[in-house]
Image 1 (cartoon, rainbow, N blue to C red):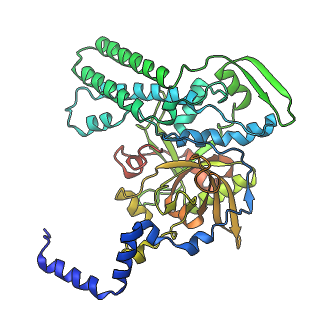
Image 2 (cartoon, rainbow, N blue to C red):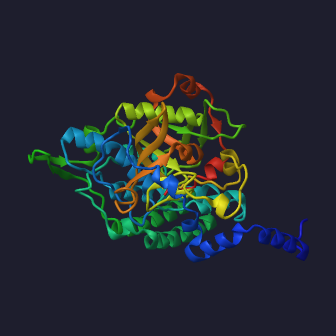
Image 3 (cartoon, rainbow, N blue to C red):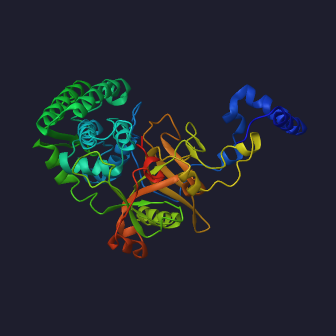
Length: 442
């Protein structure tokens, strides 16, 4: 076992003092902080937000102080289609409508997990895992797809945002207290009948909270809009399901989840499954076709050339300037201002849990240079105050290092890899890095 000694401290002190740059850097960091002192201005200037291929977007959405990026990004995929077909200046689908049911369904999944593990020791890995799953903002594209198929969708004009959809922390603190209380009651229960009653009582209380905080979900509505030619349109007595069937039926059906898991033990061209990650009990969990990062990029380019955006999940907190809207592994000179990290592969970052897919956005364009992607246009959901009026610029190198999955029409994926869909899926351990590291995308 290694211990820290005065001799080691003296050795490190002497080495630090011998490097004349350290005092200058120390002064800069002390005055403006690590981030500002490390900014690579030349690299920032390379991002001019001009792209050789791009899909037109309208107003930028804003998830505010909530972790609903996965939901915003999924709904944003459909916006260009609806805006074009209805000849609109701008349009949004309701995030809060699906958000209500997502939280109800997550609560039900949590309670079912507690029931399934009720006879295990409370300190067992399985019970701790179950108790960690709770009702909160984050999620995945598959969550969205399961929700829209079960509950339909409505325009934002008939079910808008509330204070609590945009600032969800207080709401979830109250919900967590209730569901954890009922979790302990269920663990002490002695029959299925008693568990059923406890589960329903808990769900009713949570339902009451969500109606008060989010709003009562719309069941029928008149769809009214004015097109670009100032012409009024109305469709009477629509339901969430009829709206979905008329305008978006089949739109998401051919999508496939491509993942980039570069660890050598996990082969490309195979489907990997996490059976326990779900927001609806009926879901099968997450299924992802593992492909090389270059195949992911090529599929993305084919999609853009066909006029379709794609949802993607990434580690947005790494090497990114939120205000400038730049994602680039060279945007900060940390290795010069602080100390070199050394070789640290994407695979090792996964296994060490150092890298986490934290955020979902949409890729809406690309700049090609010398026949290869150079920078990617990204539509975010952080409002127009970040990036260039809400648009981010992602370098191709950043795509390689920090993008973990995209949702894309499978017709853009090479047949070589699509063959993996017919092979026996490989089941991830629920404790595998690629499952636990994703956590919830917010």
